[in-house]
Structure formats: structure tokens, C-alpha cells
Length: 217
Length: 217
DNA sequence: CCTAAAGTGGGACGAGCGTACCGCTTAATG
DNA sequence: CATTAAGCGGTACGCTCGTCCCACTTTAGG
Image (cartoon, rainbow over all chains, first blue to last red; front, side, top):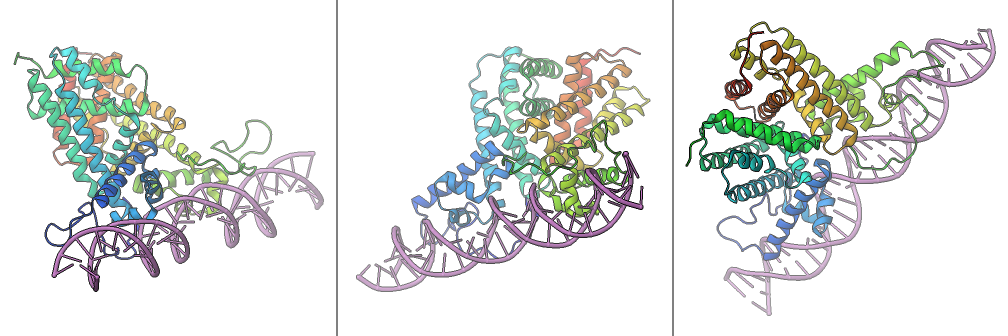
């Protein structure tokens, strides 16, 4: 994430998400856990609002209502903070998508198309932050795993939808649909053209027709 | 690109790509034009190698073999430099894609699929920089126009390929193929999975089949 | 209760950033 | 040839950044 070499070892405090070693020692204090989460939340929010550059120690600390040093205390570095924020963002995103997918009852192709096409239209700033981090994973091996987890999670969700709607849902079909959705998603988030929704619906309908035939479940 | 307010008017020198006003005054000196281009080249290269954060005045100047002040002299601000670099990158990218598309002779679906699937596999760092800038356009209205120009340029190229290969090439079909390609492209650039090429070929073949029928030109 | 460790917060440090300044050089115009 | 402005480059300013330091308070195990 940053190419600068570290200057010195961090002082001996909690690091990288795990508040305490699994055995021995004291339990983490409640407030410490709350603060850790508050910082992560703040980082995720800032990432969405202002992008990568907006996530500074000072901004995160201020947003979480904590002193500056708290960010260094709970995270070994800015990179670690960003990495954890990315993981959290992905986790939440997948959970939200899963939830809205499970709420579906209609199984008509149009309904499925509409559902998938609108699946990502939650919160534009957050999406931008998510994609920014995803792209960063192309440069930073530490983020690769999270990026793939996102892709795989989307695949799994799409597979579930396809299966429940009676479409073929092997790997090629799922990948085909997911990739198309990614393209639509990104284009919509970045360019925000007004006609995007209608075109997305059309594209998804085409994709579903392409992987058909559909059989009643 | 940056949310910071400007501090003062720039001093009265050349600004933003146009070396001189259209009428009156002197001709730009040859070296000035060369320097302008050298800075832009350097910025584009740095953007590809190290991403957004790597494009600093100092890095650009050093790379171009020019003194630090040259960057401020030829570009009104870092944002202006980045914007012009984005435009240049898009222009080159489109030209390269166009060139490799025009070199095609085979019209079999497989050949088309392979061609499209490999169209973006030129230079991974550059692609990363390009996508980074594209994403930034979601936040910066000044970049929106360039982002759309890229999308539209891709559409046009794909439309040409489809037409020459005898596929339907109306707007919905073209958008469908382009969007899928974007998804494949980004996924490949970021995740760099080894099996990507084969899957891309499969996906493109599906997309072509979906928009068919193909008629001999 | 005592004490060692964890938690806390204010401040400081050094580096890198974008940008402005200003005196010098170069080249085109009259 | 003189003059005027563009071109140029070294340097400095003001700022924000990530990180570290260190004295202080709280907590919990013995």
C-alpha cells in the first residue's frame, strides 16, 4: 500500500486486529474493543467519503472521537488499518448483498434481472471506496486475498440466486454473470449515467437468456 | 482530485496544456513543447508504476530530467497534470486497441473471442493506472468527460469489430459486449489469476453467441 | 492492597508534499 | 542592436503526514 520502508519496530502494544493472544494474560477491556471497532468504522466511512487519501491517522482519530495516538496504538501501521478496513467493508458488502438476495420471491427473468442489476445500488461513496481498495489489491499482495474473497463471495451469491431461479449454475455460467455484473456495477458507480439502470436490466436479461435454458425448480 | 482550496493565483505563465494563446504573441519554443510532453510522459509512466500517490512534482520532474519548477511552470497544478496525463493515457490506450483490432483477419467466433479477450493484455502497470484514474472520475467531475470518452471509445472499437465480423452491432449489443469485457479486464488486471485467459475466452464466446445470429459480411 | 502491565493522550519529530518566489538566461520583436 | 517578456532553475515556505516518545491513569492478578 505504501512503498516506504518502516523506520523502526512498533512499540510493544496490541497489533493487527487481534486484541490479545489466545492464551494467558488478561482479557481485553471492553472499551479497548469498542475503540478498535470505532476506529475501523471511522476508517471505512472516510474511505467511502473521500477515498484513499482521506484515511489519515488524524482524520480517523477525530472521526472516532479518539486521540491521535489511538490509531497507532490499535493498528501497527496505516497499511494495517486500511487492510482491516477493506476486509470489513467487503464483509459488510457481501452480507448486504446476501440479505437482499434472500428477500427475493419472484422468479421471473425480469425480476431476477432487476434484482441483480440493482444489487449494488446501495451507497455510491462506499462503493467507490470498495472499488478503490479492490484496485489497490492489484499492486499490494497483502490485499489480494481480500479482493479474491470479494469476487468469490459474489460468485457464491450469484450461484445461489441462479440455482433458486432454476438457471444453470455451474462455474462458467456463474462467472459469466458475475463478471458482467461487475462491469455494470463499476460503470454505473463511476459514470453515473441516468440511463444506466435500464441498460443494466437489458444486459442482465441478455446474460440470463445466454446461460439458459431455465427449468422450473 | 484534491479537495484542498487553492491558496493563491498561479503566477502568470503558461497553463494547462495550451502553450500559448491562439492569436498574437510568440510561437512556443521547440524545447518548451518537448518539455511539456516529457513531463506528461513521465507522469503517465509514474502513474502506471506506482499509482496515484507516485505522481508528485518532484518525481515527475526527476523522471523527465527537468528541474522541479518545470512542473509548476508547465502545469497550473498537480490536478491539471494528472488530468492531462489521464487524457493522454486514454488516447494511447484507444489507439493501441484500435490498431490491434484492425490487424485482425480471421472472423471465426473463436478468433474474435480470443482477440477481444486479449485486447487489454498489454501492460499491467499502465492498466492499473488507467483504472485508478477512471475510478477517480467517480469523485472528480473534471475527469468524468475523459472517463466517458474512454467508455465511448471502447464501444466504438467493439462496434467496428462486431460489424466486420458480421454480428449485430446495435447499441444494446455493443454495450453488452463492452461491459462484459470491462469486467473481465478489471478482474484480470487486479487478481491476475492464471486461469483468467481461458475463462475470458469462454465468456466472450458466450457473449457473442448471445448477441448473434452472425451473418456472413 | 500492591504492583506490573495495559491503556491513554498530548506533544514533538523528521520527511515529503505542492507551490511560490526571484534572479538569471534566452530568444523574438521593434 | 535594444528591449521586453518568456523560459528557467535553485531554493525556501508552509503544511500535513505517519510515527514515535513519555508521562500519566486504569485495570486486574497475586
